[in-house]
Image (cartoon, rainbow, N blue to C red; front, side, top):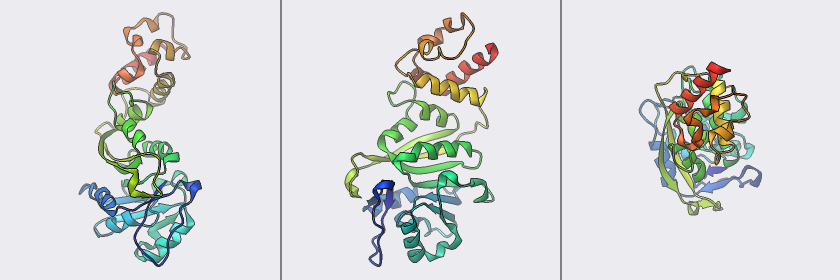
Length: 266
């Protein structure tokens, strides 16, 4: 997990290996991330503020209603000392277990430098709350960011790509070198922005859509005819030409069409 480190000398937070903490030493990047917010982003939830270098730039805009959630108690103490204006908006806890419906009275934007080991879980929780989270700006492992933003036909295109792009427009903003962290991680990072698209719901059964997408990509090198054999289709259904394709060749709308056809015969 990458934690933004403010250059303050009164106290510091010790990086914790169990949390995968790496401190960002280049504040210019934190400022860049804060500037990616749009004028429509008013309620802000920052995940993993650490020592608050991103928080520092967020709270400069007094029009924003900012809440931060941090699981590391030492970081919480640091933030209480250096950002007392956060008050009750500083939440000590685990984002994955929070009841997000109680945080704001209306929709909100998620922002932060997300722990690599739970980044997918964070995204799935955002999906579960997509009607209340119109946008997200965050730093991920570069490989994960590429996967989220990839289009059909790209080798990085996969489960996250399809499920997220069904409801969000995604922009890969910029790459972050490992040299700006202390200690430096072994991989590069990247910042992406997700903006809710106009689709209120899928044009098919959403649960079945997730099942088909995950099943198809679990054997991504195989054609759909082979990767989806575990689903009990009627005899002859797999003769449709679409089953000659591999999952990375299908767009979100292609998967929706496939699932609608599956619904008819199940």
